[in-house]
Image (cartoon, rainbow, N blue to C red; front, side, top):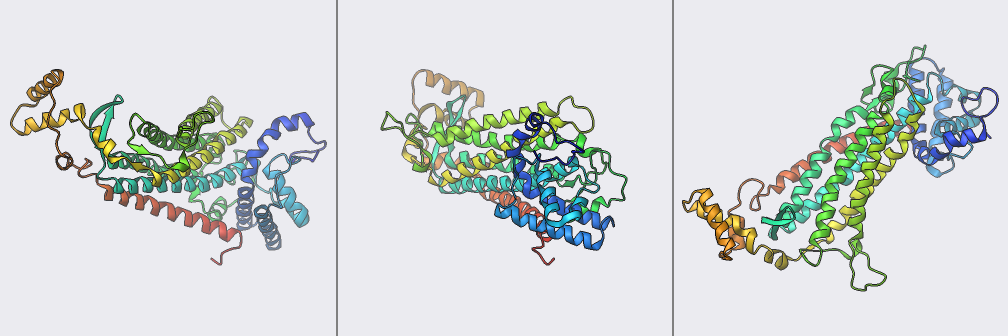
Length: 456
């Protein structure tokens, strides 16, 4: 068995090694690229702190840039004999650069190292999820524009309530998504702080210029106190998974509505062939599996959030090995959320409204409130009109239904069928896109400079 970074004489017992590190490998492997980049930023901080001579800095930087290319080509991987991603990178750099590789860990602990890796990974994944969510919102807004004239009932208690429209339905879900996406900058401010230099939670007796490493990695700042990164473990993870759960709730409702409205008893929507499966025994079936599994995976997101919250609860200050177990629910949630958003988004252009079936469902009780308001406009008091219409319905009387134009024309208030304000939502989407593009550009530019792929 290979020695660990902390081995002083004998390597750890095989059973102990497997128990503490073995199951973490598949999740740790996702951090390999980020560990190399984080190490490049750390080396820049060491050079700025005059803890590396010019030649040492140059050799370490060159070795790490070579390591990054090896990660990208698949030549550098996390092996079973490596305790963790940090071991794999440091051992590789030391093999390639000799004794200078033993200086890589100067002023650093695996504690602040993994915090840095996770924050870099988080920044990349949060922006990717943000992009997928924005694209889904845009698809829904496109659907709303196409189907602005498609009327159908709105529901309360799963019972027909009042006239609504396909545009109002899709636009409302898009707005909910935008509301969630617009909360990312607050979470981003927490993630966009470098923990490097905090070491195991109490700093190091070296003149580290922590800000230099932070700037090199494109972070907006640092965690001010060296105790913050470790005592805050799990807090950022919980906030990130909660944000994913909020997005999940938005698309779970979307999926549930699509399942319901496409059922034969409703028939308002026809599903694209790419989003349905068949039955092994019933040849007529068109099952909405994509939407059902999306709804189910959102429940799994909630389970991951519960795991993260439970892991960090009741722990005292400083580092605890329990924190290692945060990776699995965090990474699984991020990957699932991006996949769900992208998959659901790909189905929206293929949704088709059966306009005649949807409009026919407006007959009867769904128009009762329109009759009440018609009488109010003709001078009746609201409560009297309400009681009169209720009594007429009990007697089985029917009212002359307003035309579609009348239904729309009487709903010109902001956000109603006749005035949904889709251009306002489109502007919000562009603003969300602009924030995302700015952060992505800043992040990618910093990493490109570290990798030696930019002249700036």
